[in-house]
Length: 535
Image: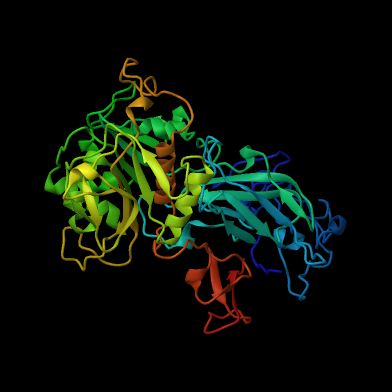
C-alpha cells in the first residue's frame, strides 16, 4: 500500500469520461488540493470542491472500501483514514482495498491512437491523485518523469500489443485514469472500479489518445508540406480532427506551413518562415519535414536553426529528400549516400532490427497490428536508397539490401538519434549531454496512393480516407516514439515511479514527487520511496 501527503485534484464527474481541467477553477464535486483550486474557494477534507460553508466530509465507511468517501455535509470530525501500516492516506489512496488470496484491484486494457484503431506501444497509463499540471510550452529538456504529473498512485506502460495492467488501484465510483505519450494526454473518469478483481476496460473511447483539444492535450506540431509526401494525410488518418490543422496564427495543434506541397484554404505561410527563426521553431514540440520531391538544400543558418532546435529538446521527423537537413546538420549520424539505386517501383521487403529492446517490440507490434505478415519484416512501397549505414550514436530500425545497387547494397530505411548528437562537439551540432531532443529519418513516406491528385491542393480535400497501410503504421509508430520521452535506445523503456514506490533518487520519481527516507529526508541509501511534499 502506498502513502501520500498530497491532496486530490482531478476532475471527477458522474459521466463515463471527462477531460483534464488543466488549469482554472474546478466546480463543486471536482477534486482539489486547496480552496484555490475550486470555484467555491472551499476544498473539503475528502479533497473535493464543496459549497462555501459546507463542513466537508467525515471519514466515512465507503461501503467496504479502504477508508472510502463519506457524504457531504459532515463535520469533518470522522477518524483520519489510514493505510494498513497505520500511516495516513489522502484522496484516492484511501480507496485502495486490502485484498486477500493474492488478488488486487486491477485495471487492464489497451491504449489506442486518436482514431481508436491502432493499439500503441510505450504509452503511460496511470491513476492520478492530484491535479494534472499543464505542460511546458515548446521544446524543453525534460527528464522522463517530468511530464507525468498528478502524484500517481498506480502507473504502468503498454507493451507491444498496446496492453496495460495496473494493480492496487483505487476502487469505487468516478476513478480518474490518464493515458499519455509525451505531450499527448487524455484523462477519463471510470464510472465504477470494483474492488479485489480485474476490471477490464474494453471501450476503445476510454483508452484512446485525444483527437482534439476538447478531449485532452496534443503536442504543438509544425508541418512544412512537401510535394512528394502528404504526411498531413497520415496525421488525419491516425485520428487528429480537421479542426486542429490551422495556419500558425490559428488555435490548432498542427500548424501548417508550405514548402512546395499543398496548402490550407487560408493563406499558408512559407516553410522558410518556420526555420528562418530559432524562436519560432522553439515554440513547437514536433517539427515534421516531409519529402519535397527534390534535394532542395537549405542555407547554413537554416540548418543551424534546426539543429539548435533539436538540441534544446525539439523533435524532428524527416522523410526521404529531407536528408538535406539531416545530412548537413548531423553528418556523423549515418553514412549519407543520396541517390543510390533503389526499389521504388517494387515492394522492398526490409528487416526490423531486433538487436535492441525497442526494436524487438517494434517487430512484434508490426505483426500485432497486421502491418507485417511475418515478425521481423515489413514490405515497403516507393522506398528510396540514401543511407547505407548508421553512425555510432544512431539506431537502425529498418534495413535491407538492394541487389542492383552494388557495390553499396545496404539500405537503411528508418533510423533515429537523440540530440545533441554524441560526437564530442566536433561537428555542426555541437554534441553535448544531456540529450534532450530526437530525430527520425525515414527513407520512405506516405505512398502516392494516399492522395487524390485530382482533388486540388487544399487540405483535406486530397486526402484519401481509409485504413492505414502497413508502412503508414510503421510511420505512426515512429511518430509516437518521437513524441515520447527521450531515452537511451539500448535499454528498454521505463516509467517514473508512483507514490510509495521504491527509489534511489528524485530522478526516479514522477513530477512533483521526491525520493525520501522514512523520516522524510532526502534519500541517502536504501529503503526510500517516492513521496509528494506536504500540502
